Length: 226
Image 1 (cartoon, rainbow, N blue to C red):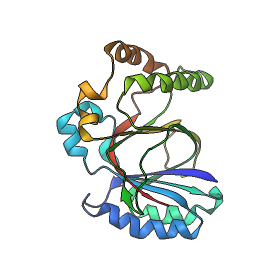
Image 2: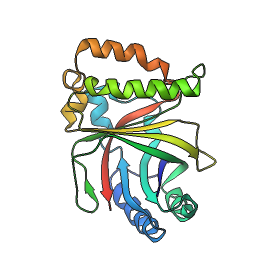
Image 3: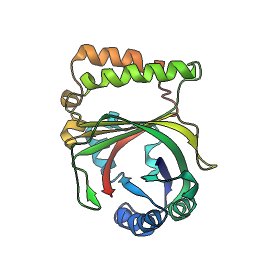
């Protein structure tokens, strides 16, 4: 099985009803080509998150219409999925990734159900001066540090980009999903961050693997299908 992550950019519709429109147009198509363990993520709380804690959103987050994830028996079968997703936004980014389950999600939802809480989604490249081997090493260091950085975080999925799948896809190396149990856990800095010493260490370390100028991050609602 191979994992694919698609980023639909350039919203062409209102956020209200977007999930249902993507579900109707994409989920059946993905199933027909063997798709399973599917997820759609939408930025339906972006305004509230920005109001409560602007720091939780960074980069060109407003350009994101939705995220679609699925597993396929082979990436070669993806064309119908991309065709279905293409009508959901102005541009489609696609990535073949390898998933590392750093902390599994404790939630099991019904078909098309919403995962409780908020999913912090981030996509990033490495700084130009950082060698690729150094990027992966420092990313692993950060992953370990992040458990103390976010004491209430419930799950952490790390995806390393193997290759781009669409011509429009920008170059990125990492896609991360971290789930927090509530909006308060995500937007209240006194809950979101752990010990101040760990926070200081994190801010000093992040530039060793994370290119701020192209990174995008924010909070999304996540819905899943088997």
